[in-house]
Length: 146
View 1 (tube, helix red, strand yellow):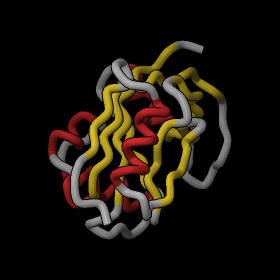
View 2 (cartoon, helix red, strand yellow):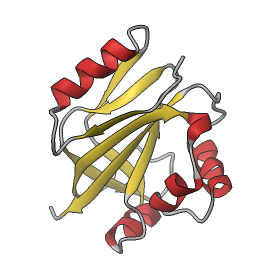
View 3 (cartoon, helix red, strand yellow):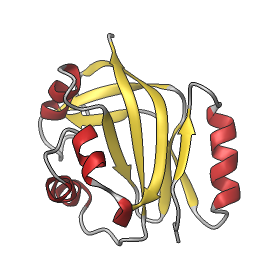
View 4 (cartoon, one colour):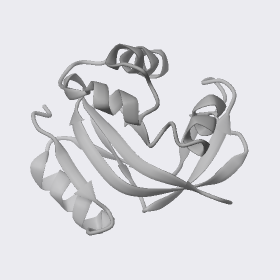
């Protein structure tokens, strides 16, 4: 069970070192490497105009983490679409791992939402029901051109 926040500045530490800390902190949790990001086109546009600075990812029973610092970004029109055009790369600068119950209004604002409730609603639409102690990974990233 996740009971605290892990924070990593990938400008200062390597992905390998980050993974080692996660494994040490939560030896019983599965780790799920992320090789790309898939975002609804609406959220891609929010990122392009600077209204969205993070993306929040969840995987039941596992901790989502970046496989590298710069990952492809795919834009989709609907959640049931698995592939779409590559619209650039996301350069990950910071990673926060925390329990779902610790999401805040600030997390919502940085992710382009007006409130914690709106964020939780959007995450529920995407991921379904989530337990308070389950991990979420917040990626602070900048969109780089193709």
